[in-house]
Amino acid sequence: MDMCLSSTQPPRSLEEAPSSPDDWLKVVEEKEGALQEGGIGGPPGDSNKIESTLQSLQTFAPTDYASYTQEHYRFAGKNIVIQESIESFGAVVWPGATALCQYLEEHTKELNLQDAKILEIGAGPGLVSIVASILGAQVTATDLPDVVGNLQYNLLRNTLRCSPHLPEVKELVWGQDLEQHFPKSAFHYDYVLASDVVYHHYFLDKLLTTMVYLSQPGTVVIWANKFRFSTDYEFLDKFKQVFDTTLLAEYPESSVKLFKGILKWE
Image (cartoon, rainbow, N blue to C red; front, side, top):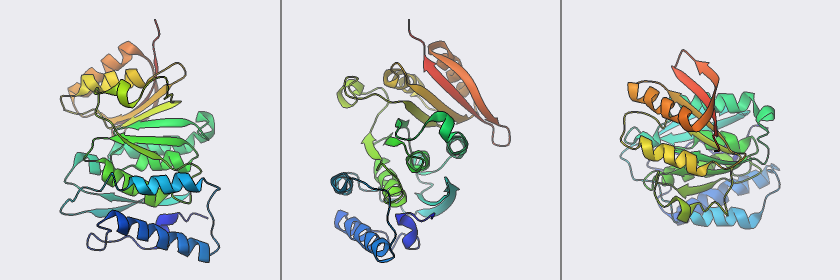
C-alpha cells in the first residue's frame, strides 16, 4: 500500500489550504478518520508523540507566500506531494535533493537507515527528510525560521501514518547557538544530510562549521550538490580538508555530485 495520509484527499489549492493551527488539526483529524474508516492503519506509533507534533504546528506556521504549487514525486514506493513556492530558495526542491533521495532509496539496507538518527541541514521543503523518514529513519529536519513552517507542513502531510517515526522540525541558523540548541551531550546523529546547500552565498564558512559541529564519532555526512560556480569547488576543497571524503555517486545529466564525509579526528 503506497497511501500516506496526504493521499487520502487531493492536494489543496492555496485558497483551500488551512490558514490557522486549528484548521491544520481539523485536516489531520479528517484524514485520520478517512484512514480508519477505510481500515487502513499505519505502523504502530506513539499517540503522544503524534499529538506533540501536531501541537508544534502552532509554532511553525507556513509563510504566507503569494503562490504555492503542488509538486509530485515518487520515492520509497510512495507518492509524495510537496508544497513549493518560487518565492524562496528554501521552498523549492533542487536537483541535489532528488539525487540524494534516489541514493537513499537505492542504498537503504547498505546505509542501515532503519531507526538511524538523521539530521538534515537546509531541509527546504522537506523531500529528503520525508524520504529518509519513510525509509525508517528518525529524522530531524532543520532550516531557517522563515522556512520551517512550510517544511513542517510537507513533513506532516507525507509522513503521518506511513513512517515509523514522525520527523521533528527545528530551526537552525548555520553557525549560531549550536551548543545551545544542539548540545553534544544530548544529540548524536548517525547521518547528517545536506543537498544543494552550497551555492553563491556568504555563509559557506558557517555551513562548514555547522557540519563539523554536528559530526561526532560515528557520524557520516552525506552531501549532494549541483556544481554551478567556482565557489562550489572551493567549498569542496575546504570540506576535504576537515572530512575524509569519498565520491559516492555522480549524475552528469544534472551536474550533481554526492559525497560522503567522515570528520578527521586529530
